[in-house]
Length: 365
Length: 128
Image 1 (tube, each protein chain N blue to C red):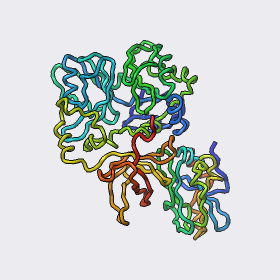
Image 2 (cartoon, one colour):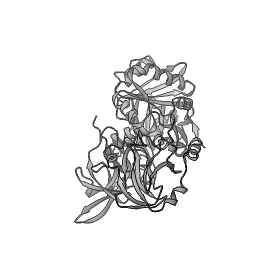
Image 3 (tube, rainbow over the protein chains, first blue to last red):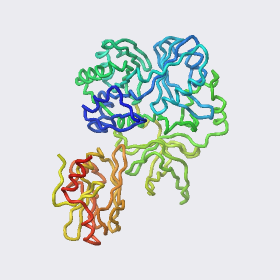
Image 4 (cartoon, rainbow over the protein chains, first blue to last red):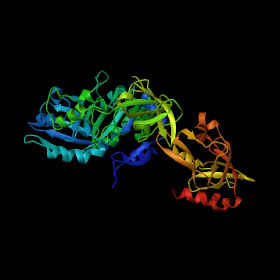
């Protein structure tokens, strides 16, 4: 069973190459992945991200409930601010990584979840719900587009008829477009300025059209999931199912900054802390290929010492970086080897490619 | 419009093979390059290496995907297009000429009969 987003016909009209992603028919690219990638880095990229799921949490105990199931401090969120957060499970891993949007302090929050985890997150939250918190699954109510790049905020200001050019990161604007509700926030998954707009599904097409129409002055390029993935990989952002999962400890993925275990209790806290206390064996690092070649997820990371080849880890995401024009990868590497500048090897189709551990992000902003 | 020259042989895996006496030049078709998207990496065998009909002999990678290359005939690799290492985009720009991959010295001419001719290959890609 594959679902179509409200923008499906737009992708077909633009000759998008459609693929099944997490049960959704999504454009992986239109004209060309690298061209789309560069458009976001240099101008504006427009992405359909309607496959992402939305869960609404309302009621007098909305905040209390969210604090109990997440690692970051939801209580610190002021109205119309958004925050990256984690949903831990009770086994030391993560149910998902999420974004929380504070619409009304204490009583009304929107959670944006990964498409691949939408139903799992919904069931997880339902099963831990407390009285006084009301959950609504709003995934079919919203379409979502990401508008990313140096010209994005100017374009969004024109399209939404509200100046957002001075918005700081994680700021929210609510309003209506063409008679439908929108929630705009300066968030994204590309490392560029810009934002993402939740738009009431029936208005998705008219918003998309207007962004493309007014966006032509900004050299906007409709861009697919392929470019979205290379852009996020260049920034070292984790992707659920790759860098984070239901078994990987989030501390190993360098997500300690989102885990406020000193300041609050939350479900799964003791298991996550136990994993850390036992000593993490591997750590997520960035790797650049020295040899021509591309490392891909699941390739093994090796170290050659005194002509002895030892296995020291595995690649979680690997691609060709359109910005750096070389192979880059995120990988879990054994702690003693996880230092910047370490020369390592990646096993690709039984060949060994030379590579080096580098600091993240790959592309400094 | 995808170019499918009449005097070439083709495989179901979207390689082309052009036979000149006992030497067969191998590449990927226009259809293959369009499906792959921008090729950013090519891995080819060494000269002198033996290849077998239908077996993988190399790899092309786009930003997003890895695809195996399959030998259209059995034989010995006598020449490799090493310019592709630095210019993988030849495979997109001109896969039938600049983007040729390898030349194989045929073991057995009869194997050519296992390959598709232009009308059958055109039929194959029109069904995609």
